[in-house]
Image (cartoon, rainbow, N blue to C red; front, side, top):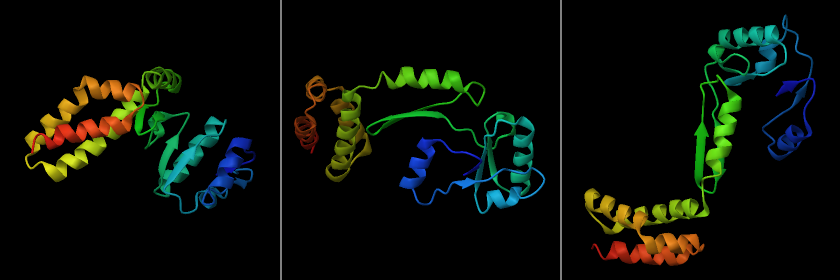
Length: 179
């Protein structure tokens, strides 16, 4: 990352990930833009200067780099969604760069709807799918079994109580009952 200043959070991130380097320097739009980009595949342009962002994006594209320009989605090759993760469940929301605020608000609202049961069900169905692949031949049968496990009230109650181990035992018995 190239900037005249970095937040303490970015500095902590760079300390945790040695491949992330923070370069303190003033960006001169007339010289050295290519140096700043180095061998990067993606250039995220995020200064508070619209004209500078434009020049950096042009230089990046002429150097065959992918560009994410935070102040101009139409000049971007890549737009990042707003994401939230709970366990193995990840949601991503995008407004196509038109309104990061709306994307953030939707992400927060949807993330709040993901329950510990949803996270447990994800883990349980991963376990169940792997077991069904080993034990059951036909894809049609496996699909029916996994749907049954996902809709099983007893399993859902076990996951609501946080008992993934019991839910796995029940799922295993359902799968083995189809052999």
